[in-house]
Length: 276
Image 1 (cartoon, helix red, strand yellow):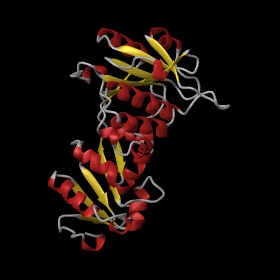
Image 2 (cartoon, rainbow, N blue to C red):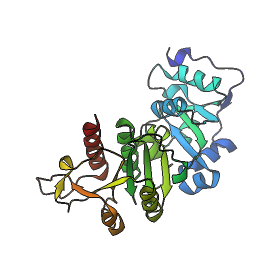
Image 3 (cartoon, helix red, strand yellow):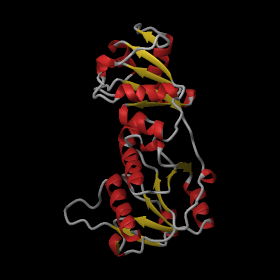
Image 4 (cartoon, rainbow, N blue to C red):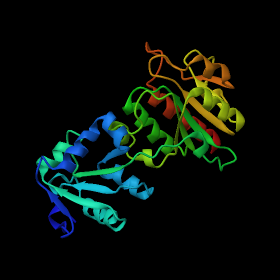
């Protein structure tokens, strides 16, 4: 089914004015201050919206521009949102580009609530949970890519410690390909997180280029959290001191470390290999 076969419902609102108050309000959500004030997140693109829907993440509003559809699956997704009670708002291309975050819009933008979790919202219902913790991550693209790796390796929860970037930044949603809605994320400061991990008897594997042990030589089975640090400085001393094991990824070139998202993926897949 292509865009030309999309059946517009008479109940859909069609917006053509750039001065429409709701459009102006949604356009402001590209700013973190506005997102936090409104408690909203922008969910742009087919894959991110599909994962929001599949994980029952509430999306009260969906803005649609048929001319920007990239494939043939958009009409079906729109109808699934409609059936879930989402309000569908049709827009003209100029209006859609006013609210779009991407340079090449895909014709779908959802607006949902920011759902934040603390450590006490994480239920450790596995005997050997695998967690990923990240301290003071600065770049939204890295955070989103780490969520994608966490989803791919079956991580039980992502612990976001002392965050320097906005979890609901549209670039996080985009880089995560919607896995922001499939991986439980808890936000807390490092001190509180360390106490929580100790209380639940979860071992800490700290990634640092200064460790002697290679990550492939460490035991990454059992209840475990893999923790990585800020892009520029790595992990802080409290994390390194609390670690049960420190591991490094071999670097044979001139660079002394990998991008934090790449390093996280390698460590998680090694943990997955050992567990399976």
